[in-house]
Amino acid sequence: MINVLTELAQHVAEGLRRAPKALSSMYFYDDAGSRLFQQIMDLPEYYPTRAEFAIFREHGAAIAAALSPADGGEFALVELGAGDGAKTKLLLRELLAAGSPFTYAPVDISAGAMTGLVSALQQELPDLQVVPVVADYATALTELPTRPGSKAVLFLGSNIGNFGPAERLDFLRQLAAPLAPADRLLIGFDLQKDPRRIRAAYDDAQGITAAFNLNLLTRLNRELGADFDLAHWQHYTDYSPLNGAVRSFLVSTRAQQVRVAALEESFDFAAWEVIHTENSYKFTLPQIEALAAEAGLRVVEYFTDPATDFADVVLAIQ
Picture 1 (tube, rainbow, N blue to C red):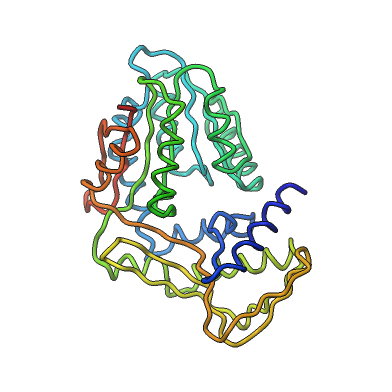
Picture 2 (cartoon, one colour):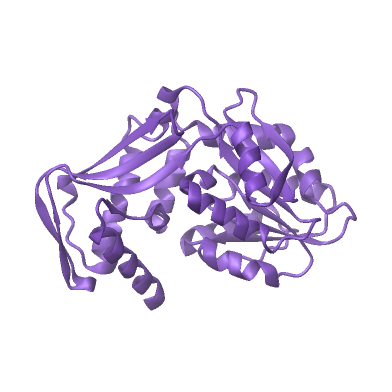
């Protein structure tokens, strides 16, 4: 835990000294944040989860076949950011039904989410071999080359959209680096659509997304001894159809000073100053193909929901 706190403290120090101030959405996902995100996925405005579920329900068998080694050999199904694994269970059932010899290695930064997932899988899919990994993406990618045999790596839920353009390309290159020609990636991409629908998905009427963002400040208060007064902060989001970017912010509603005890430092905020917390980019299919090529990957196959809101894309190295 000391390493995690040290990493978080260092990130906060760097992020709050910047202009404009920024914190990574990676730190949204403590146990409380993970629970709130599960609620977000059930919201009427939040279409990505329903769209991806529709893809897995309709194309599950084809996706399982696309990810399995052609020689029928054993492989590891590694999922980055597994969460509750609800969508993945559809794929796991298809693979088990097909008799595919594989091990499921879910990766998540939240120990609570991982415990819940493993417990559910033991009850629902008792024949499944599960090797859980509590780690961040960077650590999981470092360990990926050490896994023997073929690999199929899942990165679902439009998480790829949380990276900025340069980070996204670097991340995909890191994913591609340890892969052999027979290995596969399955990445979820949220597609561009009605801008109003996109914005509503990140600013729901019930305020669950706002609570999810504000929970980051609660975490800093708890883990770093900060004194953010949540009564004087609010959530704001916007969407630009020009670059496909949803941006989320925490907004200081008055001039205030925040002390972070773990850093022995205070930070001044002007009235209406923001902390940029998240990007969520939306894509077109040609953009996905161009991005893959730049990262040394090729599109093997892609699957979309009936409304073409979302795409799950199977990729391999060039």
